[in-house]
Amino acid sequence: MSFADWRRRRPAIWAGRLALVVAVALAAMTLALAVTPKAGVSVFGQSVAVGAVPPSLSLGLSGPGQAELFGEGMVETIQHFDGPIRPLIVWKRFNRNDDAAAFIQSGSADGHRTVSTGSAEVGRELAAGWTRYFGWLVAIAGLLGGGLYLVTAGAVALLGRDHGRSRAVHLGLFGASVAAALVMTLGFTALTVRTAVHQLGSVTSLSDLVGAANLAPLPAAVGPERADTDVVVIGDSTAAGIGNTPIRKPTREDNACQRSADAYATSLQSIAGVSVLNLACSSATVASGLLGPQPAAGLTLPPQVGVLRSVQSAKVVVVSIGANDVGWSDFLRYCYGLPRCDDEASNKLFQSRLDAFKIQYAQLLQQLSDLPTHPQVIVTKYYDPLGSSFDCPALQDPQAEAGGPPGYGFGPDPGKDNQGDKVKKKIQPLRVELARMNAVLEQGAEAFGFTVVQPRFDGHELCTDQPWVQGMRDTAPFHPTAAGELAITAAILPQLPG
Image (cartoon, rainbow, N blue to C red; front, side, top):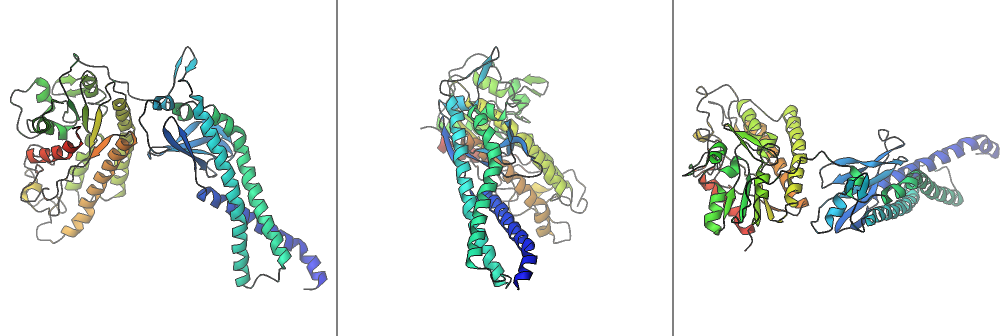
């Protein structure tokens, strides 16, 4: 290229180089946001990580930050920040200790905030964590800017499009890429830093950060105080033992809740030698049964947690809840009656119910963690009632016409070998939903430091020689038999103190 040609093309050459530097800087900033480790913060025994929310068109140039709580999804912060890159607060686990309440919430009286001594430490640590993260983000963006330029330059040379750039040009572009990545990242985040340090520094509790939820009111203690009970069982029909041997001298509440003499609460009492109070009730949910009153057989039963609060001697609380909240029986009937249930509509419906249950379940766990006697809390997950065989009387609807419509039931259609197809379309979706519900139970319990147990019915599911699950012809299909209740007892026993 002659000197005259170079002069004519110089504006285009410099424009191309400028575009390359800007593109490298933008890519470096984006990659830095993805790889920069979050800054750890420890306040009141809680481990929190502080990072950044990557910019997007939906976020705009200013707005709230985000907080990820206990793996249950994102919520927006109360604070609004300038700039497209805003703080992200991640709190994965709740550590129960005497100081935790100062972090979780603060109260107010007569318009004045009341917080525990030293709660300003929360804001200081969050602001300091964001500052540390900001410094690392800028530094890593600069390093990536240089690295990405070298990769780009190498690729261009391999393609033969280097056009004889000198070492000086490469060094200049390398330095420009590093500087541009630093300046661009610094410029984007500086807008946020101006307000973030002040906003985060004013946080004195988690409620200051994400706001107060519309929590269910704490049930008042119900009935006279009791000091003769070691273990209290709360929950649904699985814990009530529905469909098994009736209680010899039942109360009106026992009959209304369909409690059984074979319920695992009875087994715990006889095997472990402890006093057990069974408050579980058939059809109970978190809102109607545990934290709120429950209508049953003409009675209005008080909240189970309210009765629990009157038990001053309880050392252990066992919880079986969730199936009614997500409508597990609805999905069992749906899958049983239709040719398939692996459709997107079923998946979305179950997920929406599961999301609603997460909020109510968190409220329940919070109420249990606030019990004045601080009992050990054991959450039981649900067993899998379905084995590997599905062609047996226990899975045949006694009210259905002989054979039923095509695709009806879990067993193969008469005269057709379609069991593998049915497992894929009907059994596997049910197991996936069960696993998702159990995952929520486990994650929530572990976030509050509670114990989780998984009853195992392996080899004793429906269609086995000795099922621990009631079949379609029994009183309460898919619920545990007396042996199944004992299996749940066996899962709980090792977790009891002593």
